[in-house]
Image 1 (spheres, rainbow, N blue to C red):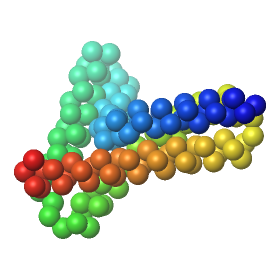
Image 2 (image 1 turned 90 degrees about the vertical axis):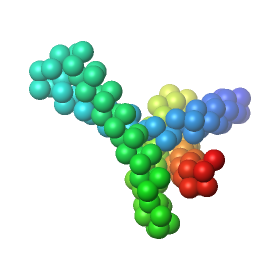
Image 3 (image 1 turned 180 degrees about the vertical axis):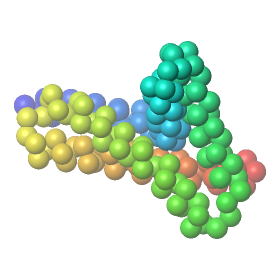
Length: 140
């Protein structure tokens, strides 16, 4: 049982690192997927839906870059960062839940692992967005 818990902690840590690397792109990716689903449901076919999703995802990330470059008040930058970090938090929670569902028999511990993983992923997205904003504002 101890070995299984150690394995879960190591896997959760590794997935949090992966989620950290991808956290900034969670909202644009989700926008792209939802736009592709909507386009496919309206009859565009798989190729058209893929193109619509790709354009929507790129536009979402472009909007992030423009907002980071143009926003000066810190409260607006924080609000924008929270908007982009919320989907990363949900994705981190779901990622950990998918793993812990099979490996952790206790519901309480599974929920604890999921909340910690989602929180770490959300905080890492905020830190990464803050670093990106700082680098853009300082001309690096």
